[in-house]
Length: 400
Image 1: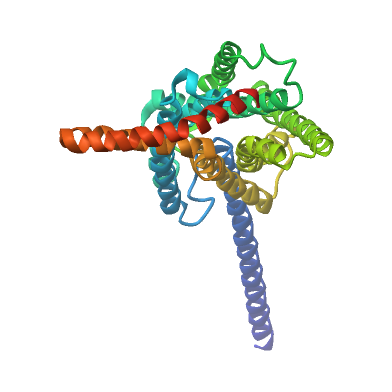
Image 2: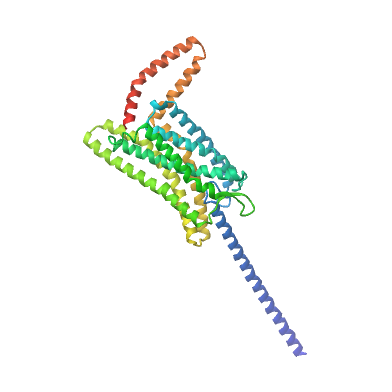
């Protein structure tokens, strides 16, 4: 009897141990499943970071509520950029070929590039509101991406031309008559456009609508090492090298102005020359500040891809969120230049005021002969009063 009781007790203990071992195995299985799911999340995160290496593709998994505030930012940039750049083109073009400065040619082309670019922002806004999905089809995906690339390249090239024009006007004025002629400036703008259109071709070729998760995304094919290397080379040739040239130009200009002002001792000439450089310099600073973070984040991501390095979740999250925000900052550059012209460039404000007065005068002419005669007389006297000053400014602008 006692032996049977002892045997039952041993069986009970064995069942208890088996139960504990089963529970332990289930706990280990749960932990493995947890880590397995975490690996899946890492793969998904890496896939989303791939999407964000392209301008305009923003996944809602990167930043909270990005599907709300990104579309609002893009539509705000669209309206301000469209109206502002159109205003710059109208004001600058109202003076004609004889009334404008040479640097105005670069300003108009810069505004035209920004105007065409902001027309694509509603597409990216809608895509952002749908968590990065692209509902506009194959053609608009390629075309809008191509426009983004062409705008990026043409902006930095026109800014480089503006810097070199200021360098020639200040440092090499006597040796740059041909280079600063109207014909040469127009030819330079044509070359810049052709070069920008050519450099944007890789985006046109490698960009397409892809469905990695069954949903359409407008993405670049970044599996090719050739394309990644080409992208890295493009960042150097179209950002790092032009910025270096711009810095060299302005360092030479500042050194020249310092020597000239000390030798001449003319504070008024010093103030005029500084004002002629202020607009171009601030526009360049705005471009560098806007595009530098994006180029840095994209260079880092391309470097990791080429090296095949494994990134931690935290690193991937930081790079993805940084690229999303830097993309917005880069897009913002296309609508800040008109505000810079209006607030800092006295020449642009005079042109805008003159255009406004001419429009008001034409509107007043339709209200009656007597009132229009009085207004025309006042307008004529005012324009005659400013003709001498405008002539002096034009002669100075053509030299500087």
